[in-house]
Length: 176
Image 1 (spheres, rainbow, N blue to C red):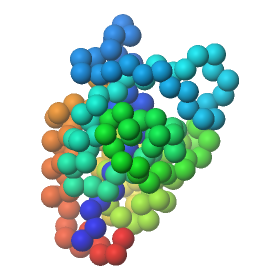
Image 2 (cartoon, rainbow, N blue to C red):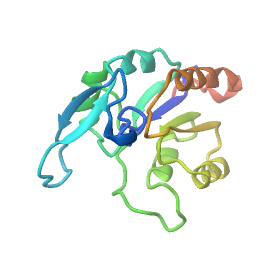
Image 3 (tube, helix red, strand yellow):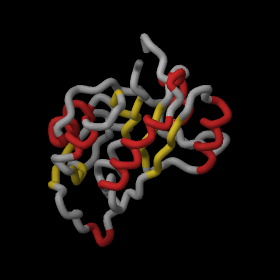
């Protein structure tokens, strides 16, 4: 049986960039990073990361996949800090609003999943995305919105860890 996919965003879930008053949350470390392709920013981005998040993510019953505008930079700049190995990357369309108000990632993730069950952890998920995926993706999905003020919490890891056990056995196809 193949485990479901877990599409993982960086900013919001792993980097609680909207923390109140710009205060770094407990347990996070500050990093100054300059991803490729992010323009000519005058200074590196401030990114808050928890070194133990990788261990918690790897303990989940999923195949982890980056689904972030960091794209391949997530493997070189984020993964090593949080303790993740190199992961597959969904190459996303250019960030823009879609005509129907979906997150710009939604259709690309459904296409990448190719009928496999998946969970998606992101701060940009809306009810419109949930409805669109429910109507167009043939397998079970869990669109899990994270508050970008706090990032992933222990309760989120528990919820994400419980979801695959609710899937029907035939949803987890061999050979994917």
